[in-house]
Image 1 (cartoon, each protein chain N blue to C red):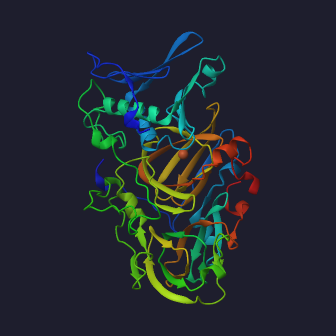
Image 2: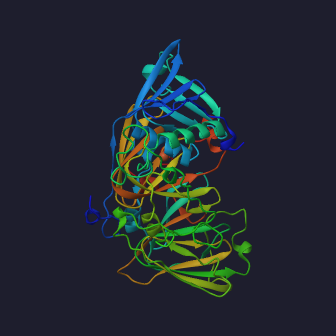
Image 3: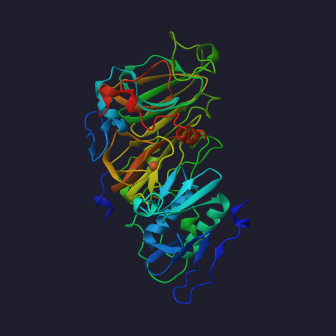
Length: 334
Length: 171
Ligand SMILES: [Fe+2]
């Protein structure tokens, strides 16, 4: 079932703001000049959550680009999505004890194509001309504010860059160049762009291969959006460039590893279930740290930085963690 | 912000600053927090120190200094140069499976020189990443003692992988 064939429940255009409202199951989504309103019903009471439209659109953009990624994508302390691989759970208040303890939270599972189609239409309708939810605030305008004013299909339609083995190999993902419309980002103007010297003997041109990964990353035009740039079986290098704030608090359904390649990111670590703060992990160039499987994390990067996210893409992992077959961190190895 | 205001900070053996963990209600051990330059500054040349592990997969930090032994694997590996200058020799092995059979994961050290056809040579600096293709033998060379290399390997855990978490991580 392709996302385009799925029916999306949307209201007519609002006379006042120009935006449409959306429904997905029992969740309602509406936006106005500044805010997005998420509504649900619990214990016979109508409840709602108000977010900045800017923050909501940045988070929704990641849900769409990442296909709901691994684990939990908390838009904030109240609303989020959980990856069920083929299906996706939306929740409000589930990981906020004030709501959950009183039974005022709401969870609903949807087939992924339906949830994806709804988010894509919402994103298309609510993204104004001149606003890029993938960009750092310094790079994009304030045109997310206000009544509906045009659209930005080019920005929200970017495809995630995924290689099969390594970019630049014959038949694999292309390298990023000026000519292919991928200039060096303003914050990485000082990153050397020279390529490694590759001397392949005749017949081995397709296998003797190297490229400038830091140069490749300097040409990323998005923030907080990992690409896949080298693969060993299910071991995935997912480097990304980060500036400002990760638009979601990511909760893991597996261990995730970070290698800070340049500059600095501060990670706020919270308990996955309650949101209680646990630690702040300050990562500088060359640092390696695990994001354990029982936490949620949100990164803050003042200067645009290069982060290598390292994932184990084994699809059996979430079930193994759920059954308690795998440790949530490696502290038992010391 | 104008472009000139940005200065990208990479780490190096000679100049790195390790981050920190501020604990609120947690244990530093839960983060297996290390720094590849710190590890390489204390490593023997070409020792493969595990800095990341996710089941059978590992990340290894290598101090590249002088010439390494030859290695091969039953799967692809990738080498990312984090600092210094490193050369990489590749040879297509005549009989790779006799050294690294398909069920054996991780790097296997060759006894002596490889038998096979020369594939090529790659010269790498900081930020450069190379494919170490399955079926090939490889060795690293870091000829310049002023540009000792630090390599981050993407591979599987094998007989050459060294785990010493308590020595490299915040506890
Ligand atoms: Fe994450």
